[in-house]
View (tube, rainbow, N blue to C red):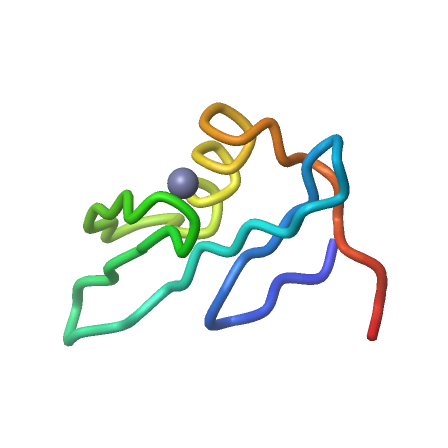
Length: 67
Ligand SMILES: [Zn+2]
């Protein structure tokens, strides 16, 4: 699985794209969802937490096609 360093995007059942952005601030990383404004800091595995949020909050589990 390819992981973009700065964001995680997944498609939901209706084909809508949801994006969680990962920002690095010093040792911390902050992840934020474009769709609902959800955010949290994650020192470890921010992409994993982003994927969990996308799946649980938006039902978005499908990797978007390459552009
Ligand atoms: Zn969200």
